[in-house]
Amino acid sequence: MKLRKELTPNIEIARKLYPVIKKKILDFTDFWDNSPDHAISRHKELEEELHKLTGKDISKFDLWEYWEADGLENLAFRISLPNPIKISDFKKEELKEVLIKINVFEEPTIEDENEEFLMLLWGNKSEYYRALLEVNFKKYDFKYFIRNKDEKGNYFEYSVDEIIEFLWENNS
Image (cartoon, rainbow, N blue to C red; front, side, top):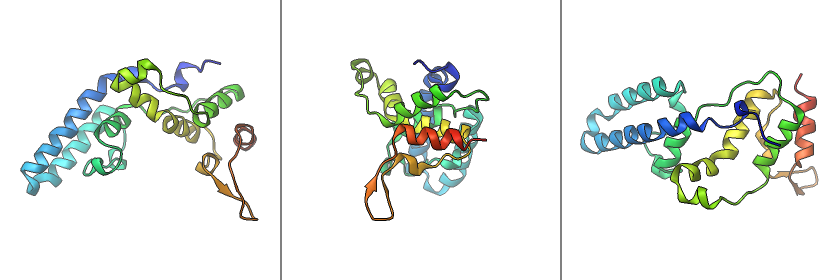
């Protein structure tokens, strides 16, 4: 099943913003290296600039030490990719497709591997789709996407069908 466009990452906007945001972060890093005494005020300016470009709360992103996390490229990509939106008529089949995209590993294509932007999209799809679920399902919980422990101390993971049941049945 192919997802409706409004359920998928808006890569057109991200593709336009990504190089601009990446350059702004690099320029800030250079500024910080050369003028550490003024870095705090420049950081606030950068947050405002990026907020105006994306509409996102930039305080959620680490502009100071991104190299200790996922690196510049992932940071710039995550900032440039628009947040998922609330969908009033989310269908159960679409929920299943989204959960498959999150839970089933897909190798990157040759096309993905040959273009930085597509590889970033491939690497960040799960995060995008979890955010989509969080926006659209009241009972979203990250625990459904990680290993859990039962009362007896046994580890388990929730299946796609179990997650569908929980999210769908508890969304009213």
